[in-house]
Each structure stands twice: as structure tokens, then as C-alpha cells.
Image (spheres, rainbow, N blue to C red):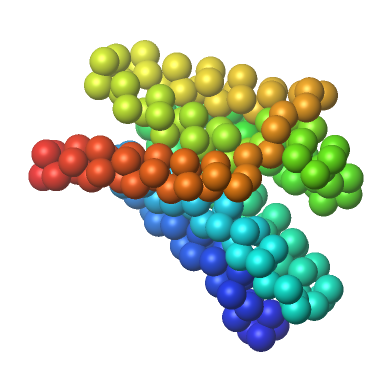
Length: 204
């Protein structure tokens, strides 16, 4: 098992999982800037593992199959459990936020199960909005938290995540971002890390 896990693309996937675990940890502590940093880097490594895997020419079918399963299970944590925990924590773990957390995780499970069976519509098109886009949008929207009261912003992110969940399962075709978009994501992740890092520094 560890031989498969030691495959370089799978190591990249596991680094993404570590980022997601850090995000969950900081979300529970109520340190939301740190949680967002972990979450956006989980997206970066999720994109990176696929790029690395495609560039390894002699990778066996067994390694490809294992990597696909590992990536899917990690996605449930990174893009299902992680934003759900952040929502619960931001809502003070109020029972009113439990339905939203369930919808987010259930949506991730349903979407990933569908993808594992049917895959892409074609080489560059998903059915429904990919789950990682939820985190990309959430990380951007959280920049404006300071303009709202805590209660108002909790409603905003609650509503936004439910709407995004609907798009995740919607029968609409969305593009798969690849190629140069990876470098755009890298700049985005670095930029948000600097901004949220600055917020953390000023809050000390």
C-alpha cells in the first residue's frame, strides 16, 4: 500500500490532504484566515497531482487507478468536509448550520461518485461545477468579511455554499481548467496567502 502512496503524484495528493487537515484544524479553532490558506493550497495540490501524473509516461494502470481513487477520497475531505467544518465553525456550531454542512458533504459525495462512474463529458468539460471551484470562490468572498457583521456574513457564506452546491449537481456543462490555468491558480494561491498572512500578522 505504501508503495502506491509513495508514487510522486500521490505524494502531491497527500500534501493537499495535509493542507485540508490544517484548514479543518484552524477552522475549528476559529482562525479563518489560516483555514482559508490551507483550503486554497489544497486546491493547488489537487490540480498539481493530475498534471504530474499526466507527465509520467511509464506509469502503470494500477498506479493510475490507485491515484484516481486516492484523489477522489481526498477531494471529499478537501472540498466537502473542509468547507462544511468552516461553515459550522463560523456559525458557532449552531444546529441551524447542520443542514448546510450536510448538503455540502452530501453534494461532494454524490458528485464524486458520479464522476468516478461517468468521468468527463469530453476531454475538457465537466457535467456540473467542479467542487474545487467552491473553495476558489469562498476564498475570494472571505476577503470581504470585514465589511459585514459576523451574523450577516455567516448568512452570506451559508447561502453562497448552498447555491454552489446546487451548481455542483446541476445538469450544465462547465469547462475543465487546465494548462496555463494552473499557473493562474498558483498566482491566486500565493496572492491570497500573502493577504491572509498579513491579516494574521495584524491580528497578533
